[in-house]
Length: 94
Image 1 (cartoon, rainbow, N blue to C red):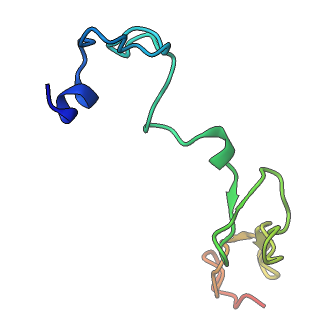
Image 2 (cartoon, rainbow, N blue to C red):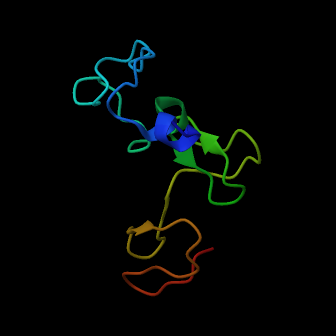
Image 3 (cartoon, rainbow, N blue to C red):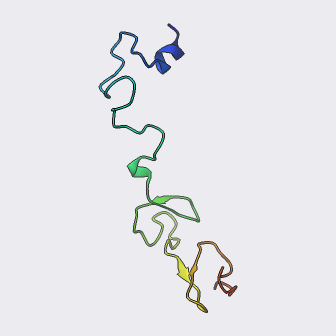
């Protein structure tokens, strides 16, 4: 049996293929390998340096950039991070 057959085999191959992760077919293992990000990777991505910050952070822990959306001074709409103008009224972001 080749290495790829061993790696991608779903039937077990006689060498304890479940390795303690449930059955060898993956239906009840409880893992979502490669489909969802790991819990430690979740958070707010800094628009400036792309560092991952914890949920609820107001400023980036790496570069200090504000992670809280700004409000338009003219119409009070939320300004998207990095926008130069308000998407609702066109007011320049200061």
